[in-house]
Image (cartoon, rainbow, N blue to C red; front, side, top):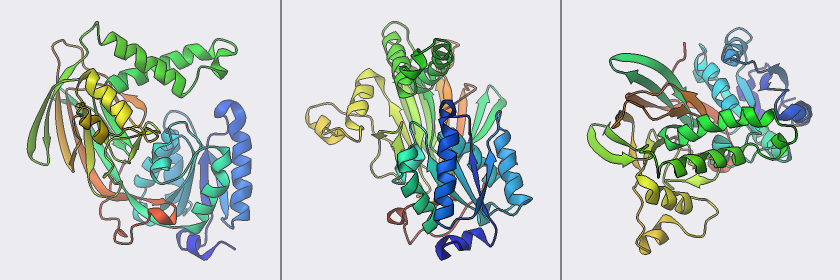
Length: 363
C-alpha cells in the first residue's frame, strides 16, 4: 500500500515515471531499474514510460494525465527532461490536480539542487524517499515570447533560466563540440558534460577581447525602465541555483512570484559573479565589494520586457533551460506564480505557500 502522504496525490492510481533508458551511454537503463525497485520498496505504485525525441514526451505526459488519469508524474533525467515533463503537465486539462516528483540524474541539476536534491544513482534512494513522503511546494513558471521586428518567432515556457549573450553562445558551441567529441573514440569519456561547456565558455570569453560581442539592453521591469549598456550576458532566473553551482541572488525563491534579471556588465563583472556567486567559494560578493570589486546587482520582477540593441546586425544567442532558441530583438517574460506543484524535501516547504495561484498552458 502507498504511504498515506503520497496517496493523496495518487488518487488510487499509479504514478508515471518518465525517463530515457538510452541516456548516459546506456547506464540510465540500470538506473531506471534501480529507481523502480526503490519506488516499489517505498510503496509508490507506478508504471514506466520512456521519453521520446523531438518534444514528443510532452504529449506522452499529457496523455498519461488526461487519458489515463495519472495525478503523480515523476521525471528522471536532466533539466531537459524536467522541462518536457513539466510542459506536458501544464498543458494537460488537470494541471492543478497533478504533482511532479524529481529523480534528477543530469549534470547541472539546477531544479533539484535548488530544492536540496542531489543527482545521480547514489542519490536515488534519498530522492525516492522524498517522493514517497509527498510534501509539495508551488514553483513559479516563466512564459517567454520572442519577437524579431514586428513578428513573433518563438513562444515557450521555462522553469530554471532564460538568457541572452555569452552563456547561450557557449551553449550552442558546446552542443556542436559535443557532437564532434562523440565521433572520436575514447575522447567522449574524458571531455564531456561540464568540461565541454567550460571549454566553450572560455573560448567565447577569449573571443570577446577581439570581437565586440557586447550588446545594450533596454528593459521595462514591472513598469520601471532600466538600461544596461555593454552587456556580455543577461540571465533571467527562477530557481536559486544556476549552472549547478552558482547563486546570483541569495534572497531569490522559486515560489515568490518573481524572477531575477541578472545583468553581466563586462568581463570584470563576469569574473566577480563567477567567483562571488560560486556556492563553494569562501569569497562572496560582499567580500569582493570590500576589495573594491563591485558586481551589477540582480533586479526582481513579475513582468519583464527586454529589447536588445547591437552595433552590428548580428543578434546575441539565446537559450531557455539549456536549450537553444531563436535569437530575437525583443523578449517578454511573465511569471505564473506557483503554477507547478513539485514534490520536495519537507525542509523546503513553506506552510504559507500552499495554493496554485496561477495556471499556464502549452496547448
